Length: 224
Length: 378
Image (cartoon, rainbow over all chains, first blue to last red; front, top):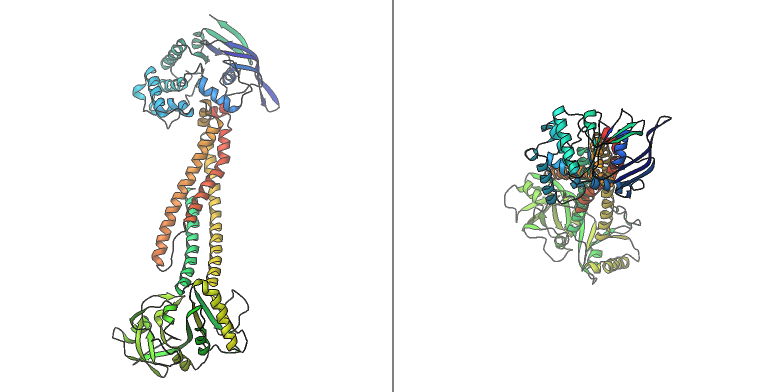
C-alpha cells in the first residue's frame, strides 16, 4: 500500500525553480497495475524516482506500507529499496562484467544473503524467466529482450511488493517489447504492484489504471 | 601507480636493510673484540665519545711496567700491552712493508685472533725481547709462497726473527687486515721502534660485571705509578658500542622516514587512480544504490579496492626489495645485509594505511553520488 500526500519536488535550475512534482496525491493499493504517461518533462520519471526512494520529495508525505519514508535516513531508505522495491530501467543497467546469474543475484549479495541460498533463489528466478541456458552468459552475449528479462529477474529476486519500470520497452523491438510487457503483467497477476512509465499509448492502455501527468500534476487518473 | 607503491615499499625496506646492516657490521666488529674489554691509551682525553688521540701527547709514557702492574688487580683477568709500528719484513729477496704489532701471548685470546698453524707467542716474561714472530697469512704467502715457513727466519728492519706461527685466515678485525701484519713480542717491538711507550693496553675484565671496578682499579694503579697524575684514557668497549649502535640506529630511522615520503607520493597516485575509477563507474554506482546498496556498502567497496591496490603494490615492493637485497648480497658478501622484520612490517602497514587514507576521498565521493543522476549519466 502506497500513499502520497501533497508531494512536491522542486529543482533549482539556475535562478529558476522548476516544479517537477506539485500537489501530487496518490494511493496505490497492493497488486495494482498502473501506467504513467505524459509528455517529456511532465514529472513521470520524478514520480517514479520518488516512489522508488531514489529521490526525496521537497515536501509532503510518502507512506510505504505504513512507513513514513520522507524522514528516514539514507541507510534506512537503502534497506527499504533493497527489500521492497524492484527497478526496471530503459537502458537495462546490467553490470557488463557479471554473468546473467550474477547480475540477478546482485541485490541478494548486497543484502548479505549466504551464497548457497542465493544460488537456489537465482535458479528459481532463471527458471521462471526461461533463462536457464543463458545463466552464464554476460550481458553483451544476450539479446535486448533477454537483457531486459535478466534485469526483471534482478528486480524481483528479493520478492519486492512494488515493481517500477521506467520505459521498459524503450530500447526493444516490438516483439521483445511485447514479451517483456507480458512478463511484467504475469508478475502483476501473481500479486506484485506494477507501475510502468511509458510513451507508448498501446502499452499504457493495457494497464488497469492509467495516470496522465502534465506539468508535475496528475491530470487524469482513470481506471477500467 | 602500483610501481610507485612498490618502489616506495622497496626503498623503505632496502634503506633500512642497509642502515641496519651497517649497524650490525659495526656491532659485530666490536663484539669480536669482546664486550668486557677496556682499552687504555696514554694521554688524557677530556671529551667523552670523541675520537681518542691517536698518538698521545703525553707528559708521561705508558710503559710496559705500567701494563704489567695492572695484572695484579683482582677484577682484571688479563692484559695485552700493544706497541705498533710499521717496518719492512724480508725473506731473501722479498720484502714487504707491514704493520708490526708488539704484544704478548695474551693478545691472541683477547683480540680473538686464531693461529692457523704453528703456535702463538709463548707465555712468559713479557719483558724479554725474544726474536720470535707470528706472520699474517697474506704476508706469509707473499714472502714464502707455498713453502714451509715454521722455523724459518725473516728479517724485520735489521733484526732476525724466527717464524713460530701463522695467523688463521679470519679476515678483518675492526677494519684492520690481520693477514697483512706480523706479531712479535712487545719488548722486541719496543727495541725495534726505539720507544719505551706503549700504543695501547687491552684490559680484559674477569666478567662484564667487573668492568667498572677493573676500570677504576686500572686508573688507580696508573695514577700511583705516575706520581698521582691521571694521565691515561680508558675506553670501555661497551660504551663505544652503544654510542655507535645509537647513532646508526637513528640514521636508519631517518633514512627509512625519508623513504616513507615516497610512499605518501604513491598514496596520492592511488587517490587519483581511485578518483578516475569512481568517475568511470558512476552509472554502476548509481545502479548499486538503486538496488539497495547503502552508502556504507559503496564506501567499503571502494576502500577495499584501494587497500587492495596498495597491498598488491606493497607485495611487489617486497619482492623488489628481496631481489635488491639478493643482488647487493652478491656484490658485498661480507656486509651483513638483511631487512629487519620491523621495517618489513612497517613498510607494508604504512602502504596499506596510505591506501586506506587516500582511498577515503574517492570512496566518499562514490558513496555520496545521487543515484538518479548517476544512473542517467552515460
